[in-house]
Image 1: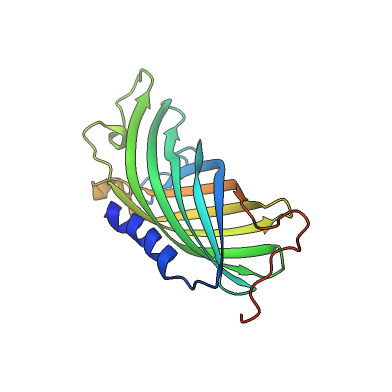
Image 2: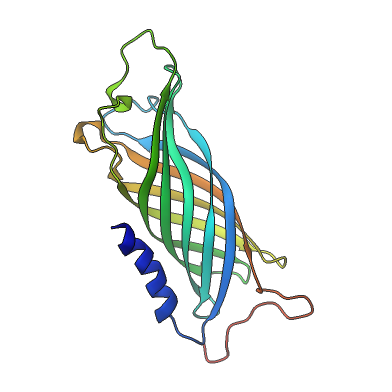
Amino acid sequence: MRPFGIGLFLYLFLVLPSNAQVFLGLKGGISANNFEAPHFDDSFYDTYPNLLGGLAVEWHLSKKIAVQPEILYAGQGAEIEDDEAALKLNYLNIPILVKYYFFPKFYIGSGFQLSYLIKEKKSFAELDNEFHPTFDDEEHIKSRDIGIPVGIGYNSKANLQLELRYVSGLSNVFENPLLESKNRSVQFTVTYFWGKNKPGEKEFTCPQNY
């Protein structure tokens, strides 16, 4: 599945119209992560903050529509505050968003995200009570995850894109269905795009035939 996700990213790069305007960006930010777990109490999991970063490509197909695939290395997971325990998950995320510019510099976007588990770490302090099975070493984490990203953003004249995004996981993090827990992430990111607004030139506009 991992080659499929990376191949999809490259496929979109090759098949998009040659007259569409394309911009490469370097992206980084912070995230607040948690699990949605219908079988556990709402207060069982606590938010786990982390970082994310990678590359983004924005294709403007028209004045108002753009496609933005990304490849991101992101830290996710959750904590259990009372037990001082944390499940730290590092993913290679491949989100692909369709963006609609409702104002010249403001957009909303949504799409889908494929994620591949790169690394997992279960950390906990000495516990007086029995360790919860969610964080047991015998419980296996799925190697893949699927999510739906939804975001709103702003593009500045300095080639910076500021975005607030929410990603809702659709699949269980664990192999064990009794421990059903889905990734949730709120992300704030800054992306620098090369060549969008070069000094002395007018701001980006799409080709006339769009």
